[in-house]
Image (cartoon, rainbow, N blue to C red; front, side, top):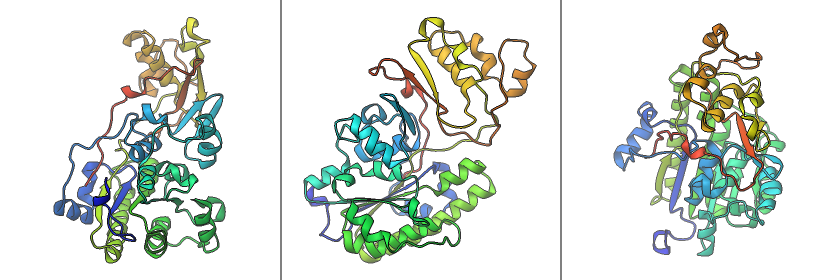
Length: 370
């Protein structure tokens, strides 16, 4: 993006909307986005990063670099003895950034490139505040802004730089009204404050609502379809209102990853027994979520370390089949069969800080991009 492609000061040149978890096939359930795609260009070969997780995708969208370069390979990661939740800005800034020579990402993000040429990027997000910060990590240094649009309660609100936080902190709504109030508030915030006062050249809105609904209810069900309809109406309102103020704004709508249903999950009850004795000092497993599937992950670790498919197959079978098996695999009753799993349940940490986990082997999922 060069100077010629940036509009006049105070005019948003580009609006990028990211709908977390929006599958390409679900756009047909969204009349406004379907209309938008027909009027413009639809990129049918859009692919997520690998691993196709939210915060790795956010960092890659911001920088144009894959997770292996950004150093954000998961929603949670292990770094120099710390389990870092990348959804938390304090973890990103106080832990991860301090470990990386005062840089959150090792490569410049779009917001920094724009700032170098006298332009500005503002990111507004209704997902985790860490995700919003990853969209514009330079906001902590005063390059544009990052605003977490979760205003219902002061503890949930996040904004950088500090001048933006102070400007908004005294006027936060204290009660939610209707479905997806954060997305409604984000629209008003963009139109009433971000565009007229911050005057961004590039504006990013990250909507986390669909991802939340699909994690809880799966996809292709009533709850997911209702969420698609609600989000579609709100995106129409947002884009219409933005174009009332800046009629020549280019609009891009995309997603960070797709979604799929799972019929069962599998436990890992005793992960240490699945690691060859010769590697017990080289690999540690860090449980980073309740009810995690450490049984199947252990089997996959063993497979990557040289076990045959036949040796690990019992651990990857459905729970009923594992229970009926006469083999040595066991479960501890901590797993739960959920309609969907989309988070990486454990972090594999080798003792060498220079070792790179084989995360790129994960299959990317299709996402919507119009």
